Amino acid sequence: MGSRSLTIPAKRAPWWSRPPELNGKPLPPAWHMPRPEQETGPACLRAVRLEADVAWVTDPDGTGPRSRQLMFLHYGLAPTHAQPLKKYGRRTGRTGVDQRERLQWVERIRAAAAPTRDDPAVLPPAVPGQLPLFPVRRMLSIDVCRRILQRPLAGYPELVEQTAAFAADTGISKAMQRKLHEMLRLALAVRDADGDDLVDELVLDDLPNYGRSVRAILLWTQMLRPLPEPREPERPQRSRTSRSTRHVWAPRPVTPRSCTQCGSWFAAKMKTTCEPCSSFARTRRNSTASTAACDRCRRVGLPLADGHCRGCRWHVAIHGPGDITRYGTQLWLGSPVPAPTSLRQSEMPPPTSRRPVSEHLMAPGQERLFELRRDWSSVAALERHDLPAPTDSAQLLLADLDSVTKQEMWSTFVASKTRRTLAVLVSWLGADAPLLESDIRALVDNRPLQFSGRQVTQFLETRGLLIPDPEFRRDAQQKRLEAELAALPATIAQELSVWIKAVRGEGKWKHAGRSYQSIARYWHVLDPVLKKWLADGLESLREITQDDIKRAIATRKGTLARSIHIVLRNVFRALRQEGVIFRDPTRGALDVQDVT
Image (cartoon, rainbow, N blue to C red; front, side):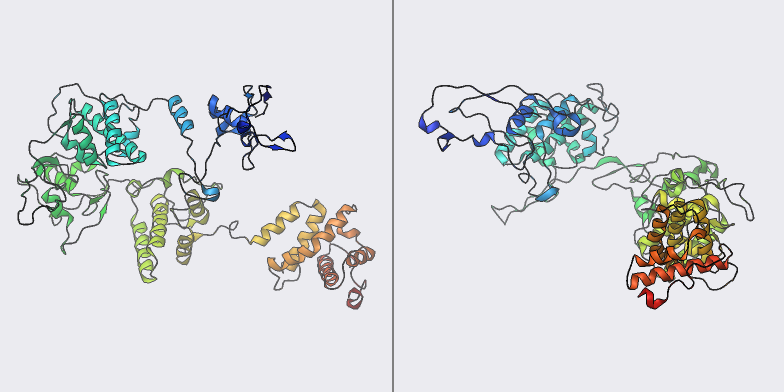
């Protein structure tokens, strides 16, 4: 952003308002000098704030330079200060590059330009005056408030004003006021969803936070319908005036509600589950049963017996095994009406799983027509109950893995990741035929934080159920040498390939060869000599003479010269052994004493 200014001469100001002078010349004011920590001058900073240039603030490099309004400077009249765009350390207390500064004026402009956030599917308003059949509790959260953040609500402006007065009396911060605005918005949205003109006090129990403060504000604005009898507080406090008297609180009212596990209707004060479900969740040792997803209704976090929750087991016991393929359950009445038993020790046979077996099972001895890399993205996102039903051999293999994890005392984190990886593989491909190591790598690469490939690979390899991937198991130095050879001319690359094969012991004379790591050290010495020969126009190693060998050795001294002599002798001896050249140019060219 460019910076221009124009000074208009005016009547000389009094001495007390004049700028400081140095050698008879006035100094420029401090607000006119660019700050060393900023890349933008003060005049441009003023222009950005006055014109609300959000595009330049968010992306100064992509937006480009801008023109600004011409300014008049008059000594004696203090102009507005050029405030920096970011004031680090004033809000978050952090130091260094990890600071975060909220540009509130940028956020306000963006919020005004953003589309209206009013999801009609969240708390839809009902017809005013409509009576509900029975009271319903709602699961309210901050995410629900964000989806109705710009919904027009009757009485909300009055509540905002009352919140400011409440903050002045109690001394709460602005951040706390914003939290109260969100809770008040939720309360008014529930009021409109119930078709009521006042907020019922029972709605405050569904708010995630600050129920007492919201109640005080609603009472002050006369928008709350209190309960007919005072409620017993959750934490009654002892009276400070007299210790001899004891206040008797009114009992909590019994209200109808729905069980969070089976969905049956019952009446209670505070319980969220009916008595049959509570007894179903307890095992013989009076401990809490493990929870998971039901195989029939697919609901998560429920206590199970043979893979099914209590509601599904009772429904199948009443309506017959044919209803195992359906999702819904019959609505029941819980206590105090006589309710079904826990069914954990029921004589009803466990419902058979309705998950089908995978259509992609690998048959033993089946050959592949061509190589293809599997795409596991859609399978990796499935939950356990959405995977195909494992075969008998797959279940035995998973049981074997569980016994290994217990015997070797694997950590819970590693054991769960390994079992999930193997469960996805065997449920989709089966366990009758060996699995490809490339399939395991493809699954792990899709979601590396959820799957573990090393333990699964070792487990399957010890049981003969793994087809190794030669490309993946190649030595890293071998891949590097192949890349180096690919960059050379074809003739020289073919000759050096013969040398590598001979050194590895795979030439005419079979012997214990060197490792790729050792050959890579030879290549490190040979590479600069080879580049010098290629720069001189070398087309084949057959063109190398003793003079070329001597000149290559003469470029270094001491140990380095000895290394060049040893590597070149190794290369040309191997090429002569394999019949690529007929004469070794390093033979008789130099002695070790001459090299040193």
